[in-house]
Length: 234
Image (cartoon, rainbow, N blue to C red; front, side, top):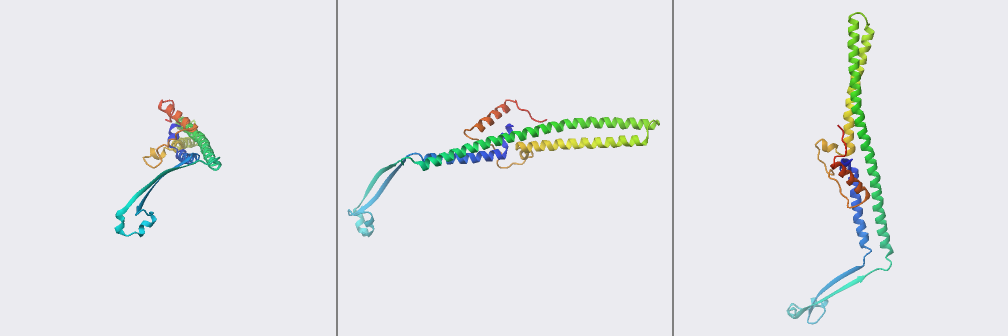
């Protein structure tokens, strides 16, 4: 579960979308603040004329020019500011919706991973069961062959024992194949299949969020994993 919380691409994509919405929340929150503009004007007067008229003066007269500066500030605060408040409220609700969607996605991921882990355990136990059946059928064939050699069995019973042994061997191979498929499927569900096969691809690094209930849950899972309380398939 800790590995799936870090490497599942759909979870990381959802976190990236939430981080993008965080920028929208900051943007709309800034719209609620008062606006303070500072300005600085630098003008060049020639022969006590305005700056706009200075271009009409000859070059020889520029030696009599002088600079004038103006500084100031403009403060504005809209009364009510309902439009900005509505945008900020919508951005916060969108972020809360995304966190709830991420929590629901994390639950679905947990269900998938736990189901895949259970299937790996079931397939592993199936190998032991089919192996025991194959050994039993092998012994049955040996007994029927020995009985046929001494004349206490028939060709039909020997053929049936051979058929049952072949079926048991096929079932054992199928169980081993199903076990390998279950392991591959579990690696896919936890998002580590490509990494385990030596394929480096973008998006393997986890996306961290600053806050949110889903992040705290994943952090708790990671802490349990580091303490060795989690289990892994054999």
